[in-house]
Image 1 (cartoon, helix red, strand yellow):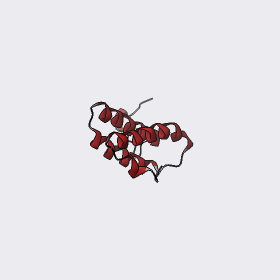
Image 2 (image 1 turned 60 degrees about the vertical axis):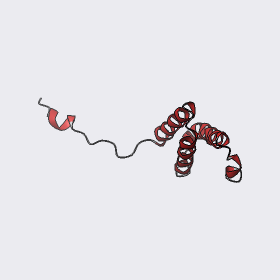
Image 3 (image 1 turned 120 degrees about the vertical axis):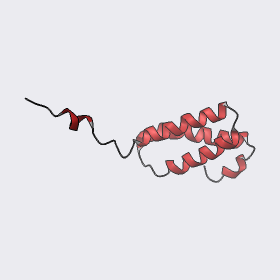
Image 4 (image 1 turned 180 degrees about the vertical axis):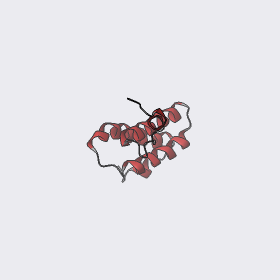
Length: 89
């Protein structure tokens, strides 16, 4: 039995990643930026991640979302602008 290895080796890459992986990636970048004391960049990253998080409605993202909201508020606290998100969260 012959198998064509050329067609099986060149499979199309996945077009959409899992939402859990995307949120986890945001979380890792956000923690790194806070650790490096780049608070303004962390604030921008956290705002973008929360905006992206609103597009997902999956229960499997809830645990990561809770961590993301924590670092979202922390990044605003470290920049001294915590009052900006008071009505949002």
